[in-house]
Amino acid sequence: FDGDANHTGSESSVVTVTVTAPVTPDTITISGTSIIQTGDVDTITATLLAGSTAISGETLNYEIKHGTTTIDSGSDTTDSNGEIEISYTGTGVGDVDVVVTYMSLQEIFVLEDLQLYDTLTSDSGHWTIPSGANVSFNSNGMVLGSSSSWKDIYLDVPITKPSEIEYEVVSWTGTNSYHLYFFDSTKANRLFQLYKDNSNHTVLDVYSSYANYWNGTIPQGATVKIKVLTDTMELYVNGELKVSKSYTMTSPFIIGVVTASSRTTTYKNLRIKAL
Image (cartoon, rainbow, N blue to C red; front, side):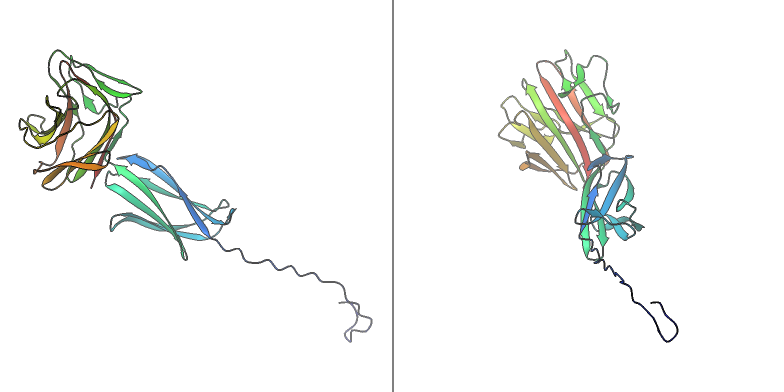
């Protein structure tokens, strides 16, 4: 306003006041690698949004949990893209929840922290392959071809129980196919076995015993899972429990496969996870 102290000769001008409605965040999104293995570093990105608009300068809290155990926790301020980054290094503990919160908002990102993840499409260096074993790797997986003599191929990763071993049986031919052996940590003694016998039974039992079996075969292309529990071994095929055997596996233990005459098996996507 112009004019003197008594407002003589004052003139008013137009004053424009703009009121901006507050922006309320309504969404948290989280992205990262969903499968990692021991030693891998996963960078997890959490983004705070209001609709499609990124919200900067706000504090997000996070907690990394395995079951009821908190592995790590903290907070960070969102950047100009509405993001914070959370770093996590795999230790093979199993399934991990990354929980991010902002006021009443919460989002959970689940990642599988595996002891080992091997696609088996190339030689990862984790396997001991003896001379004369007919073993190759290609886009279909790890191919165990027919060999003139019995050859044990070991996975050089000690496994502790309770744990879960999962893989795909891409294809197989011949009798006594899809062998999987469990050895003690010295590799000197076969302890347990999974294989197809001459009667098309799928045997899950101690080595050289054939009593505990499922009267069926593992179809080609199936996903096989073996749970090594405190005192039980369980076989799942495509998510369905087929055989349960009371057995106390030593810990740690080693798994292996075998080549022999008149049989071939192809495996893919081996995953070993703590339970």
